[in-house]
Image (cartoon, rainbow, N blue to C red; front, side, top):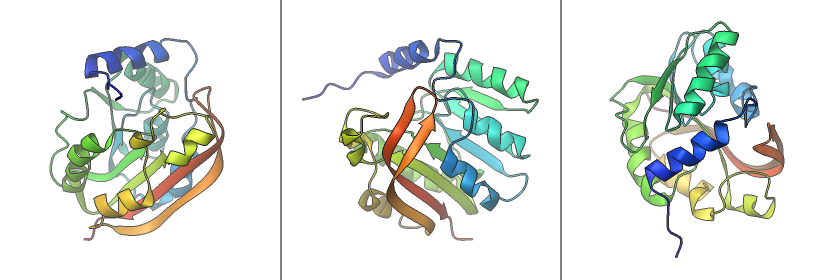
Length: 209
């Protein structure tokens, strides 16, 4: 039986990983997010989940969106603010555990989840909140590793239960309109943290108006 670390332990672990001059996952946005960013209406209110050092939030802010990045690592968020300053864009950062953070209701035009991996019991808590907090017509963008990622060992958590499958997203987000949904293998080159061939799931979905 695998004992899951408590939130303080997880927070300390991520603080330690981010406590370097380099950006663990680089400073460039995720490739999938970059490829679908044009689908987000101009000047949207965007939430980036577990945004770490801010590469995705800063990218979206540079497109003119109002971006809030939430993460449990204060060290990561401090680096996110530094990255935002270097790019001369505003970025709201919130230091919080997403199992406790109030996502609100009909609040966000777009929610972005890039390699935010949590076990099934936490998915059951957070995913319904995502649906509630997304405005009608709003978009959900996800890229996650799938369990096949364990055969590549090029990033991501060591447990399959933290990863997503088509079956899981079909169940969790059945009320959304799927504009793009796929499992595939691709090269993920994102700093030292994600480098090499990887098995991923990609989702672009929209809440019915």
